[in-house]
Each structure stands twice: as structure tokens, then as C-alpha cells.
Image 1 (cartoon, rainbow over the protein chains, first blue to last red):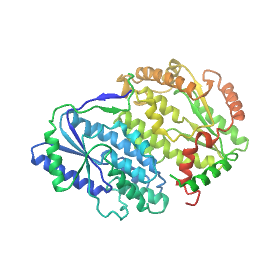
Image 2: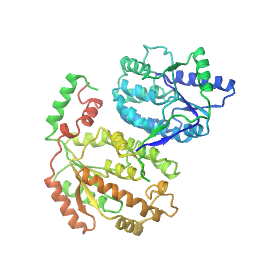
Image 3: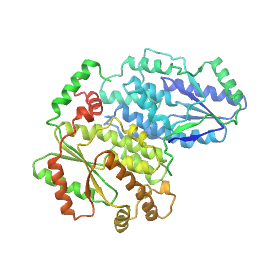
Image 4: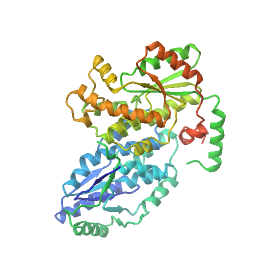
Length: 222
Length: 251
């Protein structure tokens, strides 16, 4: 049923519970890769502009559920895959997806969505070659309600306006717990030493060799 | 998800509402099959019988419509983006207009429902299983009326009224430059998907080739005989999620 796609490039996924930390970690990885002579691109959240447009349209009426926001995330990710991530992977380059699928899955689960539902929804995305986690800061603080900071902050703004109450601390803790789950794969840390390790791991992984296949929600029919 | 005691409370509320809630009727069929005409006729008739009626159309959510419109116009949507944006629109309408109307006892007439997405997106090559998952938790209509016609008849009717737009004609997947020729190829796949869905999901079929009045009479009969699909059996998760979110429980 699913296409078997192989790419010669490398995909690094950076996920955390705060948008600012995700961006900072992605910038550090790209800078280190470039220092090492490896061209590296970043794919950031809301490249499609959907979330920005949604916030503008929804001004005054923010009756939006977590499930709707997860669907918008999937749509934005489809855009990023098409225009930013797959072209780099096909050309054999390195791309840092910040954030990637784990952010949406973990945040959704923190807000009551089934983890399995979001994971299935996002199976249009190829698996990352390398997962990067972040040593979370301000762990007992709620999210700032910001439209431009990152997916969790954006959702906090929309959901809190809709429910007229703050998201619980438990939601953030649950998100961090899920982001910390390794699922049989190593999670690299985005600390200064960690970035060195990440760069070495990517450079050593023999660029140009095909990576494992991705599953896309396409049938075999033409 | 709700705590166990909360879940029990929600189930009880849903069960209590079953008798007074409104009926959800979906109109499905290829373009040009007369769904909108029949929906309008039925609405007028129901209102004459003192029913409160709400109509909802495909891709009409105030939140998503502008985003969809601009992207369709500049033809930038991939098959996945097209499908997902329609899923966003559908979910938002279910939560903000369809379920509130049903809960307050109004009849909802849906001019196209999720089966439109299943037929069109499957015709575009997406996996039906993934599509069903994307649209879950499902809110099942009490009655799905399928206006059946052949692909050739649909093409002929469309050709006599207007040139189909880029995505309506399926030009994003056929690659055919002439909109009408592309539509002919695409609608053939869509009708095949619809026919498969009509068996699996037990649509009630109305022959779209019959006279408008005869179709209307048949639709009236179907609606008069329609029985509710119990929410607790068919749509519990969708209703429960909406209830908890919308604070009907005062949570």
C-alpha cells in the first residue's frame, strides 16, 4: 500500500516542549555542520503560513480543538516535506526538521489526543535518521501564549482562548515524558558537547548512501 | 480523555439526549447529480413541517475556507495537503456547527459529507485506511442519500453548465491540460470509489437520472422512515470529545 521511498540525504529531527529551545538547538546544529563543511538546511514550523493565517482568521473566534490543530500541523508538515525536506534528502543533503513529528505527538497526548492517532496521521513523514532532544528548562512553568514562537506556544494560545482556562502543568509534564521516550532509538542531546556528537554521527554516516525507506499514505493505484 | 467518573457522566448525557437530538442527513454523489437541489427542496419541506434545519456545505468553514480558496487558486496544493486541509475544514464544522445543532434538536443537512473526501482522495491515490483514520473519530450520519449517476452523465452535465476548476477536474493528478477531458478521466475514478463506499457504508441510493420531483418524493419517504443511528453505538468518541471540549459538562 505505501510507497517505498529511499533518500540519499540525512534527516535530523529536533523536538522539545518549547519552540525557542527547538530553534536554538537547530541553529547550533546547522552552524556546527557548516563549520565542518557540510551544507545543512533547516525546516521550521509553519513554513506553509497556515498557522499564521489561522490565527488571523480566528481572531475573536478561537473555538478550535486540539484535534483540529493536529490536522493543521499535518498539513503544514506535508508542505514542509514537499518543499523543504524531501528536496534536500533527494539531493543527498542534510536537513534539520525543527520541530518534527514527536513534538506534535507529545503535545497532542499532553492535551488528551491519542498518541497512536497522531502518529498514524503523521505517517506521511519519513522517519528521522537522528533524533535530538533538549534538556528542558523552566519545567514547571506553563507555556507562553505566543503565535510566533512554536507549535506548543501557539496551541496554548488558541486552546486557552477557546477553553478560557490555562492548560494544566500536567500537559507539559506529559509532553516532556513522551519526548524523553527513546522507542528503541538513541536520542542525542542538543548540549554543546551533544552538538559535536551529532555532527560527527552525521558526517560519519556516509553521506550519499541510501537511507531506509519511508512510508507514505499512498495506495499502489495509479 | 475524560476521567472514568466523567466518562460515565458523559455517556449518561449522550444516552439521555438520544431521543431529542436532531437527525444528521448526508447528501452524496458526483458533481452534477443534483444534491444541492434536493437538499434545498428537503430543507423547505422540513421547515414547512416545523423542523428546525441547519445546512452545511463542503469546504465552508469560515476558518479554513479562505486558506483553501487562495491555495486552490494558485494551484499549490499537493494531494496530501489538499486532503488534510479538507479534513481540518470538516473537523471544525463538525465541532462548531454540526454537533451543536444536532445536540439542540435541529436537523442537519450535509451537502457532501466525509464520503466526498474518501471518494475524491482515494481517487487521487491516497490510502483509504489513512483517510478514515484522519477523519476519525467519526460522526456517523443517520442517513446517507447517494445520488447515483454514471461518470459519463456527470461529465455531460458539468460540460453543459461550466468548465470545471483545476482541482475539481482532478488536473493535479491526471496532468491533462483540458479541464473537461481531465474531469472525464477523474470522475470515472471518483464514481468507482463512491460505488465501493456505497456498499461498505450502506448508502441509500436515489437515481439522479429521474425527474427532480420524483427524486424529492423518494427523499421525503426516506427521511420520514429514517431511524437514528445510536450515538453510543456509532459515534460515541466524537460526541464525547466535543462535549468535554465544549464544557457542556461545566468542566
